[in-house]
Length: 171
Image (cartoon, rainbow, N blue to C red; front, side):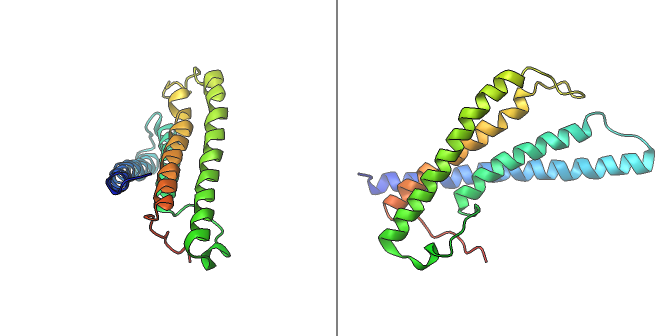
């Protein structure tokens, strides 16, 4: 069903996506850290502030959470209770892992489904300080969920072909 070349392309594609998302999340975390330090120094050192600084930090944090969730699923570091599954090997283990990825994909598809009406209903309001439309922040939910679904489907194919690597032990 899947040729070896296709599986290799999926693995290479996932590594590229990992690098892009990890770089984005790292830059956002660095921006949050820098902004936090700057706001503290300005507040306590100069009795001043940056207009919209706290709002920008919140928005960056929302995006790091959405993108970070996708990266964690891609790396197999998502929350999982694997007490019994760790004792399985071979085909039964692959079936349970595939079912788990499909369940995660389904939950994220439901989140996308319910987030779109929410964005349509409240997305045109602007943020109080920065005057950014709320949809620009709210769209992080379907973006993050869509990336999670892409990772899940990719891992289903890799599990199906027996090429998926074992996730790191959480202990």
